[in-house]
Length: 442
Ligand SMILES: *Cc1c(COP(=O)(O)O)cnc(C)c1O
Image (tube, rainbow, N blue to C red; front, side):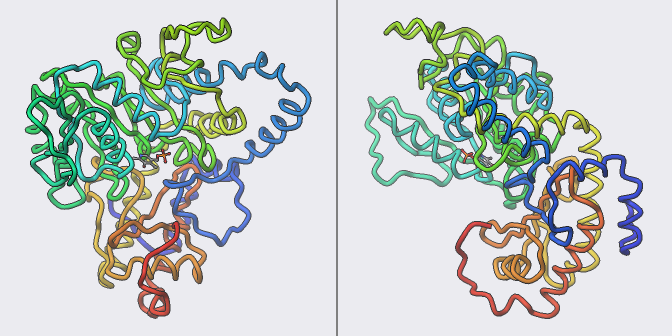
């Protein structure tokens, strides 16, 4: 869609935005700060402050151990059911638990056990490194090797003929931006136990066709495990429609659950009693408070829990999710696409001539809610934006400035102004005084 890119038109777009009011539901203390990193750590909802205080003072302070009978025992599933509404899943299919990485471990191992005799885990090189580390940990579990035919080989692995080994097949993207769909489909075969991908990838925001990949995996009897960390709350996810088997994801990004808030996991209803949780703890036990020494898994999504839920960290997730449900994901997605398109229109006009490249898919149908721009000096530009321009994007190696759009609180005027400040940093060479050596978290 064509945009006029002057500042007046940005204000007009904000005036026409039916979701604009949601910004006031977040703590925004510095109106000049342009926050473009909601894809790494979402902003703090105002109601979370009151809820956290209440939980500390009333819940913990007054109710003490009685709090467990005031709803704490069910919190994993209750908040999970709300997240399910954002993911096109059904009640009883999603629970809050652990971290994304830990959930990935649990569900990947559960899937591998459910497909005995098969040796391949198929993923791509756009996946989040932690996901691939988890697969490496799994492969090292039993006798294993990394003979992928593509790129990763563990130097110490000397598989012998009788080893039952897992191969981690890391299919390379053709351009570092788009998912290697054709090669992935070719790599998924009768020997594949598990296909695991980031639905929206963390660098370029490329978003897979979940239904198509899942259908192909199912045709050959493989299971699918989707990492939704960058899609939950930002793109329309249809787990049930896609017939997806398993999924995990973050709550501290687009769900605004707070730094390090616990993650969620999804197991399709009909698979729940077929799979077993490899980290079998008392919260996944059928009757935890019988204190019997024999593990007997609970039925349903509860069996994928392990230990005591971190109540103080889960409570804020509910507030973030309620805000998304109130705004409506379909409407948020429409705004997100308009905003990333607007950002790209500004890039074309102001930043492309300064050497910035588009490192995200040009077609919004394949793009999540952030835009990566490449520049040889991206790290130093990132530093100058943070230190001198009051703009917070983030940097991902080797040369990506990631600009996260969170339609609940990002305005068109902010996007316009952020690009103007980026232009200034490069035109006036304000980044040159920063050290080229990358370090630290952005
Ligand atoms: C952010 C992110 C994670 C983070 O995992 P943690 O266990 O919470 O550290 C995992 N996967 C993807 C795709 C992510 O974007």
